Image (spheres, rainbow, N blue to C red):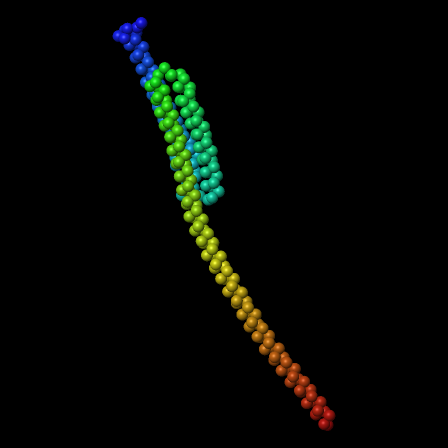
Length: 206
């Protein structure tokens, strides 16, 4: 049996502590690297792939621009979720098996898995809120456009009614003018007929 105070046991304990410390430090670094990766990959507020869209927002993006970029961003989120799932699986299975001799490392790995899952959940919430905000802006703009369209339609109908009224009035004036012209022609024809009768009588009298 190895004596509790033996140099070999102390060396082994120190070596174990070093391995555990390094393992936990590596896990922490990997968790932080994964966090930065998914943010740079899919956070629409910062990721490079959404840079052009963020510039579009300044001039109000169209529905098609929002829809296509939202779809692309959700695809990036899905990729980040796959990477996260793979790392969580590594922490909860592979690493647990390799370090089953160290309760310190296995406990640390479980906590890291929780952090990683929290990070992807936070990213998902960030993405959801970002696009919800874009949808609200679009809804507001759409309402303005709809209101403007209704106003334009109202004005167009009013103009159409006015044109119709003016046309009817013009037709009425034309009708009255035509009636007066017909009346004048009838009076002329009547006078001509009377003149013919008078001339005939005068001829017969002679």
